[in-house]
Image 1: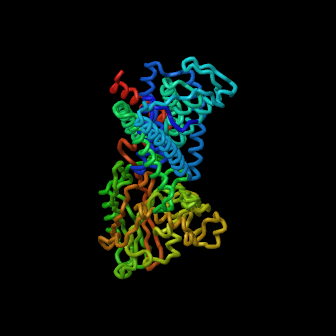
Image 2: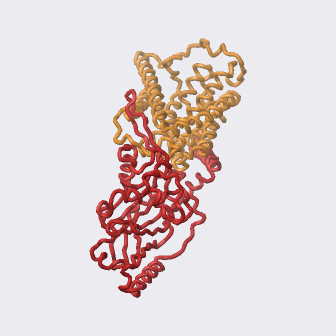
Image 3: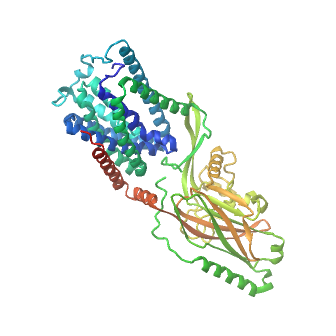
Length: 295
Length: 315
Protein backbone atom coordinates (compact mmCIF):
# COMPACT_ATOMS: atom_id res chain seq x y z
CA UNK A 1 0.00 0.00 0.00
CA UNK A 2 1.36 3.39 -1.01
CA UNK A 3 2.12 5.99 1.58
CA UNK A 4 0.29 8.74 -0.18
CA UNK A 5 -3.38 9.10 -0.92
CA UNK A 6 -4.90 10.36 -4.16
CA UNK A 7 -5.29 14.08 -4.34
CA UNK A 8 -8.68 14.09 -5.92
CA UNK A 9 -11.03 16.79 -4.62
CA UNK A 10 -13.41 14.13 -3.43
CA UNK A 11 -10.94 12.75 -0.95
CA UNK A 12 -10.82 16.17 0.69
CA UNK A 13 -14.45 15.78 1.64
CA UNK A 14 -13.77 12.38 3.10
CA UNK A 15 -10.97 13.75 5.20
CA UNK A 16 -13.16 16.54 6.45
CA UNK A 17 -15.72 13.91 7.34
CA UNK A 18 -13.07 11.84 9.07
CA UNK A 19 -11.70 14.85 10.88
CA UNK A 20 -15.02 16.21 11.98
CA UNK A 21 -17.53 13.40 11.90
CA UNK A 22 -15.69 10.29 12.96
CA UNK A 23 -13.76 11.70 15.85
CA UNK A 24 -16.71 13.74 17.10
CA UNK A 25 -18.22 11.02 19.26
CA UNK A 26 -15.12 10.03 21.13
CA UNK A 27 -13.54 13.46 21.28
CA UNK A 28 -16.58 15.16 22.70
CA UNK A 29 -16.31 12.59 25.43
CA UNK A 30 -12.81 13.82 26.24
CA UNK A 31 -13.97 17.34 26.86
CA UNK A 32 -16.96 16.54 28.99
CA UNK A 33 -15.67 13.48 30.82
CA UNK A 34 -18.23 11.25 29.21
CA UNK A 35 -17.24 7.64 29.89
CA UNK A 36 -15.44 6.29 26.80
CA UNK A 37 -17.84 3.32 26.66
CA UNK A 38 -20.80 5.68 26.23
CA UNK A 39 -18.95 8.06 23.93
CA UNK A 40 -17.90 5.26 21.62
CA UNK A 41 -21.27 3.50 21.46
CA UNK A 42 -23.05 6.79 20.99
CA UNK A 43 -20.55 7.64 18.27
CA UNK A 44 -21.81 4.64 16.30
CA UNK A 45 -25.33 6.02 16.58
CA UNK A 46 -24.20 9.43 15.39
CA UNK A 47 -22.39 7.91 12.41
CA UNK A 48 -25.75 6.70 11.03
CA UNK A 49 -27.06 10.26 10.62
CA UNK A 50 -24.02 11.64 8.80
CA UNK A 51 -23.74 8.51 6.65
CA UNK A 52 -27.43 8.53 5.74
CA UNK A 53 -27.24 12.18 4.79
CA UNK A 54 -24.21 11.56 2.60
CA UNK A 55 -25.44 8.28 1.14
CA UNK A 56 -28.70 9.92 -0.01
CA UNK A 57 -26.74 12.41 -2.08
CA UNK A 58 -24.58 9.69 -3.56
CA UNK A 59 -27.58 7.49 -4.26
CA UNK A 60 -29.26 10.27 -6.24
CA UNK A 61 -26.05 10.79 -8.19
CA UNK A 62 -25.89 7.09 -8.83
CA UNK A 63 -22.51 6.71 -7.20
CA UNK A 64 -23.39 3.78 -4.94
CA UNK A 65 -22.48 0.23 -5.91
CA UNK A 66 -25.31 -1.61 -4.17
CA UNK A 67 -23.90 -5.07 -4.83
CA UNK A 68 -20.45 -4.23 -3.51
CA UNK A 69 -22.06 -2.37 -0.61
CA UNK A 70 -24.20 -5.40 0.26
CA UNK A 71 -21.24 -7.78 0.32
CA UNK A 72 -19.33 -5.29 2.48
CA UNK A 73 -22.38 -5.07 4.71
CA UNK A 74 -22.49 -8.85 5.23
CA UNK A 75 -18.96 -8.68 6.56
CA UNK A 76 -19.90 -5.57 8.53
CA UNK A 77 -22.79 -7.29 10.34
CA UNK A 78 -20.59 -10.16 11.49
CA UNK A 79 -17.93 -7.63 12.49
CA UNK A 80 -20.48 -5.63 14.43
CA UNK A 81 -21.58 -8.68 16.46
CA UNK A 82 -17.98 -9.62 17.11
CA UNK A 83 -17.08 -6.04 17.98
CA UNK A 84 -19.89 -5.63 20.50
CA UNK A 85 -18.93 -8.97 22.08
CA UNK A 86 -15.31 -7.80 22.38
CA UNK A 87 -16.52 -4.44 23.73
CA UNK A 88 -18.62 -6.16 26.41
CA UNK A 89 -15.79 -8.46 27.41
CA UNK A 90 -13.20 -5.68 27.60
CA UNK A 91 -15.56 -3.62 29.69
CA UNK A 92 -16.05 -6.45 32.18
CA UNK A 93 -12.34 -6.92 32.65
CA UNK A 94 -11.81 -3.18 32.97
CA UNK A 95 -9.65 -2.73 29.88
CA UNK A 96 -12.10 -1.07 27.47
CA UNK A 97 -10.95 2.49 28.09
CA UNK A 98 -7.34 1.49 27.56
CA UNK A 99 -8.01 -0.41 24.32
CA UNK A 100 -10.18 2.39 22.91
CA UNK A 101 -7.52 4.96 23.75
CA UNK A 102 -4.73 2.84 22.28
CA UNK A 103 -6.71 2.27 19.08
CA UNK A 104 -7.38 5.99 18.78
CA UNK A 105 -3.71 6.83 19.36
CA UNK A 106 -2.63 4.31 16.72
CA UNK A 107 -5.24 5.31 14.14
CA UNK A 108 -5.04 9.06 14.72
CA UNK A 109 -1.26 8.94 14.73
CA UNK A 110 -1.14 6.82 11.59
CA UNK A 111 -3.73 8.79 9.66
CA UNK A 112 -2.42 12.16 10.81
CA UNK A 113 1.12 11.16 9.91
CA UNK A 114 0.14 9.85 6.47
CA UNK A 115 -1.96 12.92 5.73
CA UNK A 116 0.79 15.28 6.82
CA UNK A 117 3.47 13.56 4.73
CA UNK A 118 1.18 13.38 1.73
CA UNK A 119 0.00 17.01 1.94
CA UNK A 120 3.55 18.33 2.38
CA UNK A 121 4.65 16.35 -0.67
CA UNK A 122 1.72 17.77 -2.62
CA UNK A 123 2.54 21.32 -1.51
CA UNK A 124 6.17 20.82 -2.55
CA UNK A 125 5.08 19.54 -5.96
CA UNK A 126 2.71 22.49 -6.43
CA UNK A 127 5.41 24.99 -5.51
CA UNK A 128 7.70 23.34 -8.07
CA UNK A 129 5.13 24.19 -10.69
CA UNK A 130 3.26 20.88 -10.94
CA UNK A 131 -0.50 20.50 -10.66
CA UNK A 132 -0.28 18.78 -7.28
CA UNK A 133 -1.95 15.76 -8.83
CA UNK A 134 -0.37 12.40 -8.81
CA UNK A 135 -1.41 9.47 -10.93
CA UNK A 136 -2.43 6.26 -9.34
CA UNK A 137 -0.33 3.39 -10.63
CA UNK A 138 -2.44 0.65 -12.15
CA UNK A 139 -0.74 -2.56 -11.12
CA UNK A 140 -2.58 -5.48 -9.60
CA UNK A 141 -1.99 -6.53 -6.01
CA UNK A 142 -2.07 -9.86 -4.21
CA UNK A 143 -5.79 -9.32 -3.60
CA UNK A 144 -6.56 -10.07 -7.22
CA UNK A 145 -5.17 -13.55 -6.96
CA UNK A 146 -7.72 -14.73 -4.35
CA UNK A 147 -10.51 -17.23 -5.19
CA UNK A 148 -14.32 -16.81 -4.97
CA UNK A 149 -14.40 -14.00 -7.46
CA UNK A 150 -17.53 -11.99 -8.03
CA UNK A 151 -18.40 -9.40 -10.64
CA UNK A 152 -19.44 -5.91 -9.53
CA UNK A 153 -20.75 -4.21 -12.68
CA UNK A 154 -21.21 -0.75 -11.21
CA UNK A 155 -17.59 -0.64 -10.06
CA UNK A 156 -16.33 -2.46 -13.15
CA UNK A 157 -14.67 -4.94 -10.85
CA UNK A 158 -14.07 -8.68 -10.89
CA UNK A 159 -12.65 -9.44 -7.49
CA UNK A 160 -12.68 -12.10 -4.78
CA UNK A 161 -15.35 -11.64 -2.08
CA UNK A 162 -12.84 -12.58 0.63
CA UNK A 163 -11.14 -9.16 0.92
CA UNK A 164 -14.51 -7.43 0.57
CA UNK A 165 -16.04 -9.43 3.42
CA UNK A 166 -12.85 -9.00 5.43
CA UNK A 167 -12.90 -5.24 4.97
CA UNK A 168 -16.58 -5.12 5.97
CA UNK A 169 -15.78 -7.21 9.05
CA UNK A 170 -13.01 -4.82 10.07
CA UNK A 171 -15.31 -1.84 9.62
CA UNK A 172 -17.96 -3.54 11.78
CA UNK A 173 -15.44 -4.15 14.57
CA UNK A 174 -14.21 -0.56 14.42
CA UNK A 175 -17.79 0.73 14.51
CA UNK A 176 -18.41 -1.22 17.70
CA UNK A 177 -15.13 -0.57 19.51
CA UNK A 178 -14.22 2.90 18.28
CA UNK A 179 -17.64 4.26 17.33
CA UNK A 180 -16.44 5.39 13.93
CA UNK A 181 -17.75 4.86 10.43
CA UNK A 182 -14.44 3.39 9.40
CA UNK A 183 -14.22 5.59 6.31
CA UNK A 184 -10.57 6.22 6.98
CA UNK A 185 -9.93 2.48 6.59
CA UNK A 186 -12.59 1.68 4.03
CA UNK A 187 -11.81 4.40 1.49
CA UNK A 188 -8.06 3.79 1.10
CA UNK A 189 -8.55 0.03 1.28
CA UNK A 190 -11.22 0.10 -1.43
CA UNK A 191 -9.12 2.36 -3.63
CA UNK A 192 -5.75 0.69 -3.20
CA UNK A 193 -6.58 -2.93 -2.42
CA UNK A 194 -9.80 -3.55 -4.31
CA UNK A 195 -9.24 -0.94 -7.03
CA UNK A 196 -12.78 0.38 -6.75
CA UNK A 197 -13.22 3.53 -8.89
CA UNK A 198 -12.93 6.69 -6.77
CA UNK A 199 -16.35 7.85 -7.93
CA UNK A 200 -18.25 5.04 -6.18
CA UNK A 201 -15.97 4.52 -3.20
CA UNK A 202 -17.53 7.03 -0.86
CA UNK A 203 -21.18 6.40 -1.71
CA UNK A 204 -20.67 2.66 -1.33
CA UNK A 205 -18.84 2.88 1.98
CA UNK A 206 -21.47 5.29 3.32
CA UNK A 207 -24.22 2.91 2.22
CA UNK A 208 -22.70 -0.02 4.09
CA UNK A 209 -21.85 1.93 7.24
CA UNK A 210 -25.46 3.08 7.70
CA UNK A 211 -26.51 -0.51 8.30
CA UNK A 212 -23.40 -1.60 10.15
CA UNK A 213 -23.70 1.36 12.52
CA UNK A 214 -27.44 0.74 12.92
CA UNK A 215 -26.88 -2.87 13.95
CA UNK A 216 -24.08 -1.77 16.27
CA UNK A 217 -26.36 0.82 17.88
CA UNK A 218 -29.13 -1.69 18.57
CA UNK A 219 -26.65 -4.27 19.89
CA UNK A 220 -24.94 -1.73 22.14
CA UNK A 221 -28.28 -0.53 23.49
CA UNK A 222 -29.43 -4.09 24.18
CA UNK A 223 -26.16 -5.47 25.55
CA UNK A 224 -24.39 -2.62 27.28
CA UNK A 225 -26.94 0.18 27.57
CA UNK A 226 -24.29 2.62 26.43
CA UNK A 227 -26.26 4.60 23.84
CA UNK A 228 -27.00 8.10 25.05
CA UNK A 229 -29.65 9.30 22.66
CA UNK A 230 -29.49 12.93 23.78
CA UNK A 231 -25.72 13.08 23.29
CA UNK A 232 -26.16 11.22 20.00
CA UNK A 233 -28.72 13.75 18.78
CA UNK A 234 -26.42 16.69 19.55
CA UNK A 235 -23.56 14.92 17.80
CA UNK A 236 -25.79 14.14 14.83
CA UNK A 237 -26.64 17.80 14.40
CA UNK A 238 -22.97 18.68 14.71
CA UNK A 239 -22.01 15.93 12.28
CA UNK A 240 -24.63 16.76 9.64
CA UNK A 241 -24.02 20.52 9.81
CA UNK A 242 -20.26 20.08 10.19
CA UNK A 243 -20.11 17.91 7.09
CA UNK A 244 -21.81 20.68 5.09
CA UNK A 245 -19.42 23.36 6.26
CA UNK A 246 -16.54 20.94 5.86
CA UNK A 247 -17.52 20.35 2.26
CA UNK A 248 -17.86 24.11 1.79
CA UNK A 249 -14.44 24.73 3.30
CA UNK A 250 -13.07 21.95 1.15
CA UNK A 251 -14.16 23.77 -1.99
CA UNK A 252 -12.61 27.07 -0.95
CA UNK A 253 -9.36 25.96 0.59
CA UNK A 254 -6.67 24.32 -1.48
CA UNK A 255 -6.82 20.60 -0.87
CA UNK A 256 -3.26 20.09 0.28
CA UNK A 257 -3.31 22.99 2.75
CA UNK A 258 -6.58 21.82 4.22
CA UNK A 259 -5.23 18.34 4.59
CA UNK A 260 -2.05 19.61 6.24
CA UNK A 261 -4.15 21.55 8.76
CA UNK A 262 -6.37 18.56 9.41
CA UNK A 263 -3.34 16.34 9.70
CA UNK A 264 -1.92 18.58 12.42
CA UNK A 265 -5.25 18.58 14.24
CA UNK A 266 -5.51 14.81 14.05
CA UNK A 267 -1.93 14.40 15.24
CA UNK A 268 -2.48 16.82 18.12
CA UNK A 269 -5.50 14.86 19.31
CA UNK A 270 -3.56 11.62 18.98
CA UNK A 271 -0.72 13.08 21.03
CA UNK A 272 -3.08 14.31 23.71
CA UNK A 273 -4.60 10.83 24.02
CA UNK A 274 -1.17 9.25 24.05
CA UNK A 275 0.00 11.60 26.76
CA UNK A 276 -2.94 10.66 28.95
CA UNK A 277 -2.01 7.00 28.66
CA UNK A 278 1.57 7.67 29.74
CA UNK A 279 1.17 10.48 32.29
CA UNK A 280 0.89 9.46 35.93
CA UNK A 281 -2.81 9.53 36.77
CA UNK A 282 -3.99 11.72 39.64
CA UNK A 283 -6.00 8.79 40.95
CA UNK A 284 -4.86 5.28 40.08
CA UNK A 285 -8.04 3.74 41.52
CA UNK A 286 -11.40 3.60 39.79
CA UNK A 287 -14.76 2.25 40.88
CA UNK A 288 -17.08 0.49 38.47
CA UNK A 289 -19.95 -1.94 38.62
CA UNK A 290 -19.04 -5.53 37.70
CA UNK A 291 -20.36 -4.91 34.17
CA UNK A 292 -17.89 -2.06 33.78
CA UNK A 293 -20.47 0.67 34.24
CA UNK A 294 -19.32 3.68 36.19
CA UNK A 295 -20.46 2.97 39.75
CA UNK B 1 -25.10 4.97 34.82
CA UNK B 2 -28.28 4.15 33.02
CA UNK B 3 -29.09 0.99 34.86
CA UNK B 4 -29.36 2.54 38.28
CA UNK B 5 -33.08 2.82 38.29
CA UNK B 6 -34.90 0.35 40.39
CA UNK B 7 -38.45 -0.59 39.68
CA UNK B 8 -40.55 1.58 41.87
CA UNK B 9 -43.99 0.31 41.06
CA UNK B 10 -44.79 -0.82 44.55
CA UNK B 11 -43.85 2.31 46.37
CA UNK B 12 -46.55 3.69 48.54
CA UNK B 13 -47.18 7.10 49.88
CA UNK B 14 -48.27 7.51 53.40
CA UNK B 15 -47.75 9.69 56.41
CA UNK B 16 -47.06 13.34 55.79
CA UNK B 17 -44.83 15.49 57.88
CA UNK B 18 -47.67 16.70 60.05
CA UNK B 19 -48.61 13.15 60.90
CA UNK B 20 -45.05 12.47 61.91
CA UNK B 21 -44.83 15.44 64.20
CA UNK B 22 -48.17 14.44 65.73
CA UNK B 23 -46.87 10.94 66.31
CA UNK B 24 -43.67 12.22 67.82
CA UNK B 25 -45.54 14.61 70.09
CA UNK B 26 -47.85 11.80 71.14
CA UNK B 27 -44.82 9.76 72.14
CA UNK B 28 -43.61 12.73 74.12
CA UNK B 29 -46.91 13.03 75.97
CA UNK B 30 -46.85 9.36 76.82
CA UNK B 31 -43.46 9.87 78.28
CA UNK B 32 -44.71 12.72 80.41
CA UNK B 33 -47.56 10.60 81.66
CA UNK B 34 -45.45 7.65 82.65
CA UNK B 35 -43.33 10.02 84.67
CA UNK B 36 -40.49 9.26 86.99
CA UNK B 37 -41.48 5.65 87.51
CA UNK B 38 -39.69 4.84 84.29
CA UNK B 39 -36.30 4.58 85.94
CA UNK B 40 -35.78 0.96 85.02
CA UNK B 41 -37.98 0.94 81.95
CA UNK B 42 -36.50 0.25 78.56
CA UNK B 43 -35.88 3.30 76.43
CA UNK B 44 -38.11 3.55 73.40
CA UNK B 45 -36.56 4.93 70.32
CA UNK B 46 -38.29 5.85 67.07
CA UNK B 47 -37.51 7.88 64.02
CA UNK B 48 -39.82 9.14 61.35
CA UNK B 49 -39.36 10.61 57.91
CA UNK B 50 -41.54 13.39 56.62
CA UNK B 51 -41.88 11.48 53.36
CA UNK B 52 -41.18 7.99 52.14
CA UNK B 53 -40.17 9.11 48.67
CA UNK B 54 -37.73 11.73 47.48
CA UNK B 55 -38.04 12.74 43.85
CA UNK B 56 -34.91 14.32 42.44
CA UNK B 57 -34.53 15.96 39.06
CA UNK B 58 -31.58 15.43 36.75
CA UNK B 59 -30.01 18.73 37.81
CA UNK B 60 -30.16 17.76 41.50
CA UNK B 61 -27.09 19.17 43.22
CA UNK B 62 -27.59 17.76 46.67
CA UNK B 63 -29.94 18.48 49.53
CA UNK B 64 -30.36 18.23 53.27
CA UNK B 65 -32.58 15.59 54.76
CA UNK B 66 -33.95 16.21 58.22
CA UNK B 67 -34.80 13.12 60.23
CA UNK B 68 -36.83 13.53 63.41
CA UNK B 69 -36.87 11.06 66.19
CA UNK B 70 -38.12 10.50 69.70
CA UNK B 71 -36.29 9.00 72.65
CA UNK B 72 -38.58 8.02 75.47
CA UNK B 73 -38.23 6.44 78.86
CA UNK B 74 -34.71 7.73 78.89
CA UNK B 75 -32.91 7.94 82.17
CA UNK B 76 -33.19 11.65 82.97
CA UNK B 77 -29.93 11.72 84.89
CA UNK B 78 -27.96 10.08 82.08
CA UNK B 79 -29.69 12.36 79.61
CA UNK B 80 -28.51 15.41 81.55
CA UNK B 81 -25.01 14.04 81.62
CA UNK B 82 -25.21 13.54 77.88
CA UNK B 83 -24.49 9.86 78.22
CA UNK B 84 -26.95 9.07 75.44
CA UNK B 85 -25.59 9.31 71.93
CA UNK B 86 -27.49 9.08 68.71
CA UNK B 87 -26.17 8.30 65.26
CA UNK B 88 -28.43 8.62 62.24
CA UNK B 89 -27.44 7.25 58.85
CA UNK B 90 -29.01 7.11 55.43
CA UNK B 91 -27.63 4.15 53.50
CA UNK B 92 -28.12 3.95 49.77
CA UNK B 93 -28.98 0.75 47.93
CA UNK B 94 -26.19 -1.78 48.10
CA UNK B 95 -24.71 -3.23 44.96
CA UNK B 96 -21.50 -4.97 43.97
CA UNK B 97 -18.62 -2.84 42.74
CA UNK B 98 -15.17 -3.49 41.35
CA UNK B 99 -12.24 -1.31 42.39
CA UNK B 100 -9.32 -1.30 39.99
CA UNK B 101 -5.82 0.02 40.33
CA UNK B 102 -3.76 1.33 37.44
CA UNK B 103 -0.08 0.47 37.28
CA UNK B 104 2.55 1.56 34.83
CA UNK B 105 3.10 -1.24 32.35
CA UNK B 106 5.53 -0.75 29.46
CA UNK B 107 5.19 2.99 29.99
CA UNK B 108 1.39 2.98 29.84
CA UNK B 109 -0.96 3.11 32.81
CA UNK B 110 -3.02 -0.06 32.74
CA UNK B 111 -5.66 -1.39 35.12
CA UNK B 112 -3.90 -4.28 36.79
CA UNK B 113 -5.12 -5.30 40.20
CA UNK B 114 -8.78 -5.30 41.15
CA UNK B 115 -10.99 -6.29 44.03
CA UNK B 116 -14.72 -6.92 43.99
CA UNK B 117 -16.85 -5.84 46.93
CA UNK B 118 -20.17 -7.57 46.73
CA UNK B 119 -22.34 -5.17 48.68
CA UNK B 120 -21.32 -1.52 48.73
CA UNK B 121 -23.82 1.21 49.60
CA UNK B 122 -24.36 3.59 46.72
CA UNK B 123 -24.35 6.43 49.21
CA UNK B 124 -23.84 6.85 52.92
CA UNK B 125 -24.71 9.94 54.94
CA UNK B 126 -24.14 9.96 58.67
CA UNK B 127 -24.99 12.43 61.40
CA UNK B 128 -23.93 11.97 64.99
CA UNK B 129 -24.13 13.73 68.32
CA UNK B 130 -20.38 13.40 68.89
CA UNK B 131 -17.36 11.99 67.04
CA UNK B 132 -17.93 8.31 66.48
CA UNK B 133 -14.74 7.41 68.30
CA UNK B 134 -16.14 9.12 71.41
CA UNK B 135 -19.52 7.45 71.12
CA UNK B 136 -18.44 3.83 71.06
CA UNK B 137 -15.48 1.57 70.52
CA UNK B 138 -14.21 0.67 67.07
CA UNK B 139 -15.16 -2.93 67.63
CA UNK B 140 -18.81 -1.96 68.08
CA UNK B 141 -18.77 0.42 65.16
CA UNK B 142 -17.48 -2.38 63.01
CA UNK B 143 -20.15 -4.77 64.18
CA UNK B 144 -22.79 -2.18 63.46
CA UNK B 145 -21.21 -1.17 60.15
CA UNK B 146 -21.19 2.35 61.47
CA UNK B 147 -19.13 5.18 59.99
CA UNK B 148 -17.34 5.52 56.69
CA UNK B 149 -14.24 3.76 57.97
CA UNK B 150 -16.20 0.82 59.33
CA UNK B 151 -19.09 0.41 56.95
CA UNK B 152 -19.34 -3.08 55.57
CA UNK B 153 -18.49 -3.49 51.91
CA UNK B 154 -19.35 -7.17 51.67
CA UNK B 155 -22.43 -8.98 52.79
CA UNK B 156 -21.97 -12.06 54.89
CA UNK B 157 -23.35 -15.32 53.63
CA UNK B 158 -24.97 -16.39 56.87
CA UNK B 159 -28.68 -15.62 57.22
CA UNK B 160 -29.77 -13.50 60.12
CA UNK B 161 -31.46 -15.43 62.93
CA UNK B 162 -35.11 -14.61 63.25
CA UNK B 163 -35.89 -11.48 65.19
CA UNK B 164 -32.41 -10.04 64.96
CA UNK B 165 -31.96 -6.65 63.44
CA UNK B 166 -29.64 -6.58 60.48
CA UNK B 167 -26.93 -4.21 59.48
CA UNK B 168 -28.27 -1.20 57.63
CA UNK B 169 -30.90 -3.26 55.90
CA UNK B 170 -34.63 -3.24 56.46
CA UNK B 171 -35.24 -5.20 59.63
CA UNK B 172 -37.83 -7.53 58.12
CA UNK B 173 -37.43 -10.68 56.08
CA UNK B 174 -36.85 -8.81 52.84
CA UNK B 175 -33.14 -9.37 53.19
CA UNK B 176 -32.79 -12.84 54.64
CA UNK B 177 -29.10 -13.05 53.69
CA UNK B 178 -28.07 -9.93 55.50
CA UNK B 179 -25.59 -10.19 58.32
CA UNK B 180 -26.92 -9.97 61.82
CA UNK B 181 -25.57 -8.48 64.96
CA UNK B 182 -25.24 -11.89 66.49
CA UNK B 183 -23.24 -13.49 63.72
CA UNK B 184 -21.01 -10.48 63.57
CA UNK B 185 -20.18 -10.47 67.24
CA UNK B 186 -18.76 -13.98 66.96
CA UNK B 187 -15.26 -13.72 65.60
CA UNK B 188 -15.06 -17.50 65.59
CA UNK B 189 -17.86 -17.76 63.07
CA UNK B 190 -15.80 -16.08 60.39
CA UNK B 191 -15.11 -19.49 58.90
CA UNK B 192 -18.64 -19.54 57.49
CA UNK B 193 -17.94 -16.49 55.43
CA UNK B 194 -16.07 -16.01 52.18
CA UNK B 195 -12.34 -15.56 52.75
CA UNK B 196 -12.33 -11.85 51.92
CA UNK B 197 -14.44 -11.16 54.96
CA UNK B 198 -13.34 -11.11 58.51
CA UNK B 199 -13.75 -8.91 61.50
CA UNK B 200 -10.39 -7.38 60.68
CA UNK B 201 -11.29 -6.28 57.21
CA UNK B 202 -9.92 -3.55 55.04
CA UNK B 203 -7.27 -2.31 57.47
CA UNK B 204 -4.52 -3.21 55.08
CA UNK B 205 -6.69 -3.42 52.00
CA UNK B 206 -5.70 -0.59 49.66
CA UNK B 207 -8.73 -1.25 47.48
CA UNK B 208 -11.19 -0.83 50.33
CA UNK B 209 -9.35 2.28 51.45
CA UNK B 210 -9.47 3.67 47.91
CA UNK B 211 -13.16 2.88 47.67
CA UNK B 212 -13.92 4.75 50.89
CA UNK B 213 -11.66 7.62 49.85
CA UNK B 214 -13.14 8.01 46.36
CA UNK B 215 -16.69 7.81 47.64
CA UNK B 216 -15.91 10.32 50.37
CA UNK B 217 -14.26 12.69 47.93
CA UNK B 218 -17.26 12.57 45.62
CA UNK B 219 -19.51 13.30 48.60
CA UNK B 220 -21.38 10.04 48.21
CA UNK B 221 -20.05 9.02 51.61
CA UNK B 222 -20.16 11.78 54.18
CA UNK B 223 -20.41 12.06 57.91
CA UNK B 224 -20.71 15.02 60.21
CA UNK B 225 -20.52 15.43 63.94
CA UNK B 226 -22.86 17.54 66.02
CA UNK B 227 -25.55 17.28 63.40
CA UNK B 228 -27.86 15.36 65.70
CA UNK B 229 -29.45 17.68 68.25
CA UNK B 230 -32.04 17.32 70.94
CA UNK B 231 -34.77 19.88 70.30
CA UNK B 232 -36.53 18.85 73.50
CA UNK B 233 -35.66 16.30 76.18
CA UNK B 234 -37.33 13.61 74.11
CA UNK B 235 -37.29 14.90 70.57
CA UNK B 236 -34.17 14.99 68.40
CA UNK B 237 -33.43 15.96 64.86
CA UNK B 238 -30.61 14.89 62.54
CA UNK B 239 -29.38 16.77 59.49
CA UNK B 240 -28.12 14.50 56.76
CA UNK B 241 -26.31 15.75 53.68
CA UNK B 242 -27.57 14.15 50.47
CA UNK B 243 -24.96 14.30 47.68
CA UNK B 244 -25.52 15.31 44.07
CA UNK B 245 -25.04 11.79 42.76
CA UNK B 246 -27.60 10.29 45.16
CA UNK B 247 -28.41 6.87 43.69
CA UNK B 248 -31.98 5.93 43.02
CA UNK B 249 -33.63 3.02 44.72
CA UNK B 250 -34.47 2.06 48.25
CA UNK B 251 -32.46 3.82 50.91
CA UNK B 252 -32.66 3.08 54.58
CA UNK B 253 -32.65 5.71 57.28
CA UNK B 254 -31.51 4.17 60.51
CA UNK B 255 -30.88 5.66 63.93
CA UNK B 256 -28.68 4.04 66.55
CA UNK B 257 -29.00 4.80 70.24
CA UNK B 258 -25.99 4.41 72.50
CA UNK B 259 -26.01 4.62 76.26
CA UNK B 260 -22.63 5.17 77.88
CA UNK B 261 -20.86 3.79 74.83
CA UNK B 262 -23.04 0.71 74.50
CA UNK B 263 -25.43 0.19 71.63
CA UNK B 264 -28.90 -0.38 72.98
CA UNK B 265 -31.49 0.31 70.32
CA UNK B 266 -32.09 1.14 66.71
CA UNK B 267 -34.96 2.29 64.59
CA UNK B 268 -35.20 2.42 60.83
CA UNK B 269 -37.40 3.68 58.05
CA UNK B 270 -37.11 3.00 54.33
CA UNK B 271 -36.85 5.89 51.91
CA UNK B 272 -37.27 5.69 48.16
CA UNK B 273 -35.26 7.92 45.91
CA UNK B 274 -36.68 8.31 42.43
CA UNK B 275 -35.62 10.48 39.54
CA UNK B 276 -38.00 12.72 37.68
CA UNK B 277 -37.77 14.62 34.45
CA UNK B 278 -37.24 13.99 30.77
CA UNK B 279 -33.74 12.57 31.09
CA UNK B 280 -34.78 10.04 33.67
CA UNK B 281 -37.71 8.97 31.49
CA UNK B 282 -35.27 8.29 28.67
CA UNK B 283 -32.97 6.50 31.05
CA UNK B 284 -35.82 4.36 32.39
CA UNK B 285 -36.91 3.54 28.89
CA UNK B 286 -33.36 2.60 27.87
CA UNK B 287 -33.16 0.26 30.85
CA UNK B 288 -36.49 -1.47 30.48
CA UNK B 289 -36.92 -1.50 26.71
CA UNK B 290 -33.30 -1.62 25.58
CA UNK B 291 -33.94 -3.07 22.12
CA UNK B 292 -36.79 -0.70 21.31
CA UNK B 293 -34.62 2.13 22.57
CA UNK B 294 -31.85 1.02 20.22
CA UNK B 295 -34.21 1.00 17.26
CA UNK B 296 -35.54 4.41 18.26
CA UNK B 297 -31.99 5.76 18.36
CA UNK B 298 -31.42 4.41 14.85
CA UNK B 299 -34.68 5.93 13.61
CA UNK B 300 -33.74 9.29 15.12
CA UNK B 301 -30.37 9.15 13.37
CA UNK B 302 -31.94 8.28 10.00
CA UNK B 303 -34.44 11.11 10.40
CA UNK B 304 -31.75 13.61 11.40
CA UNK B 305 -29.60 12.59 8.47
CA UNK B 306 -32.51 12.91 6.07
CA UNK B 307 -33.57 16.24 7.55
CA UNK B 308 -30.02 17.58 7.30
CA UNK B 309 -30.02 16.52 3.67
CA UNK B 310 -33.27 18.41 3.02
CA UNK B 311 -32.05 21.54 4.81
CA UNK B 312 -28.64 21.68 3.16
CA UNK B 313 -29.70 20.42 -0.24
CA UNK B 314 -27.44 21.80 -2.91
CA UNK B 315 -27.84 19.51 -5.86
